[in-house]
Amino acid sequence: MGRTAACAALVLAVPAGACAQSRDIRLVPGVYAGHHTLSARPTGCTVVLTPDGAVGGVDVRGGAPGTRETDLLDPVNSVQRVNGIALSGGSAFGLDVATGVSRFLEERGSGFPAGSVRVPIVPAAILFDLSIGDPSIRPDAECGYRAAEAAMTGDGALAEGNVGAGAGATVGKIAGMDRAMKSGIGTASITLSSGLIVAAVVAVNPVGDVVDPRTGRVVAGVRTEQGDELAGASQILREGRPLAELPGGNTVIGVVATNATLTKAEATKVAQMAQDGLARAVVPSHTPWDGDTIFTLATGEREGDDLTTIGALAADVVAEAILRSVYAAESIEGIPALSDMP
Image 1 (tube, helix red, strand yellow):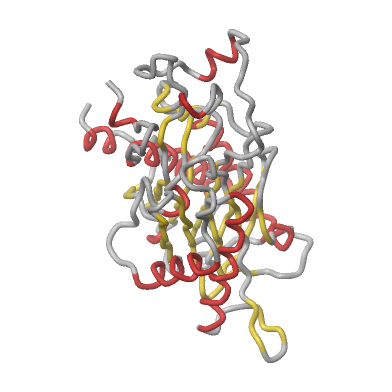
Image 2 (cartoon, one colour):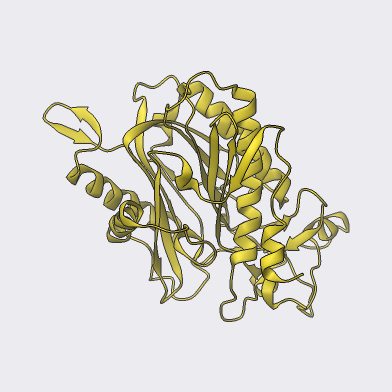
């Protein structure tokens, strides 16, 4: 199957009434997204902005997360709206990205009103890519600022693959980095005939394999010792073979956005349901070595949409975005991409 045909085949089954399906999280009105890539390593960051504010939620299921301000998204806490989400490579160093995003938003008057100032609310999550290239090169506040600029000025399709938070992402590390494959970042969206939009952008850097949920077929992941075929993480686990010594740094991180009106508790439920899409497309997922984290942003443009529908669609677009991340990825030195496999 050619690469164009393969990407076209990624459309997942959606509920009756879906009138359009495309791939960009920015189809949600009021949602902006952009990347900044440090190609010298490579690594980078991706930001999703809601300058006018959006109700936020989060669900963290991996055993090794790296996050900022996720406690604010707890439904029992007082801040109701967020102004952006930062996704970054660079492990914990990459959390600095959110500072640059906050500076960008403050300069434009976005944020929580606190007396005479506005404080932008920018939760963040990171993935571990320090084993790729020079680990002293990592995203910082300036990268976050530039990604925010790109989000507000960009046009055309949002780039996928080896860009932003997916620039240094890899997949299939259960047997070690020398048998891994290149992945990246992907985006997907579903628009129903009613006007409801649910979309996602996901950076894919798991211990496990990426699997097509429709067929169960491994698309990208751990390779055989010869390196020219997929070994299958599930097969390795079922055979009880020794695993690589895996540090707490891999992780799938992403953002789901919708034009629906949600409370913080409902946004949190959507993030939980969206994790089902992650579990369908990444095997194994939510391991002790992954920090799997999904955020939700609800802009409130529409009223009365069914929560179950929103959550189910969130799982679909997360799974599709994960698949897109490996189809769009390109190889880097020593780590092949799907397009390089026989």
